[in-house]
Image (tube, rainbow, N blue to C red; front, side, top):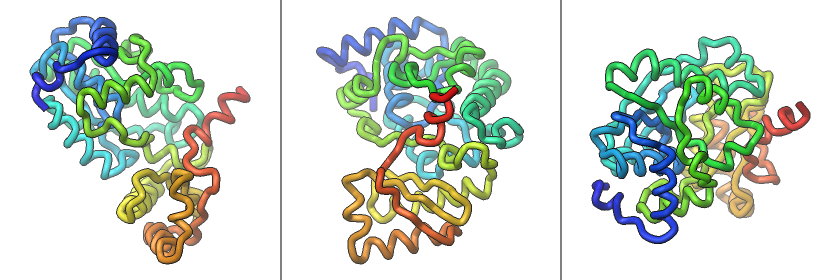
Length: 284
């Protein structure tokens, strides 16, 4: 995607983009903590639109908690926007607080990412500011402890500051022609492990392998929750009849078991965002 294409916004998407640009300010060179999801993709595209691609850098944190498919997709999206992407290896797994997997796990992960950006990337690439893709819906949720890490590191959140919720972000993404406009949310693999059960590289590899195998069968969105020997598979509710149909059920069972699970259950509630964290933080 060229900057000329990025610039062709009209109507409400153009007004929303202008609000994001105003919230972003005018940093000499901006680093965007980038995942390839719709929020960070819109932020990256609007930053490139406002500052130019040579003043914008996408930064992808890479660790065992990043799904292999997501890593590939992030490179494709940044290339389509025309902004260079660098990979930054993070080591949140070395942090006992992260491995303990409490409701604050995301704080430790984001703190590790922003610390490494500050220590290893900012000076090398002459970055004067860092931003990430928190939207207005995220800012209102109680299960987003990574937001505190962003505050601690003075990371910008232009989408939230401009008042763009998830629906607005997707509207802008469609207007920009971004491939990620309708991409399902893809939280990190550690979010599939129940709180207070240790996060390990082995569990993350199991989850990644199982979810990749499910998507290979044609399911666009899937979460494999790790319960020891049991994999609890979440799919969109509309996909549940397909999942239990003759032929598909057997393929799903074999696909998830191939990742090392002994039992596979299908959750009738479908995809559940924040199912592990929200009950804990709401009670707190």
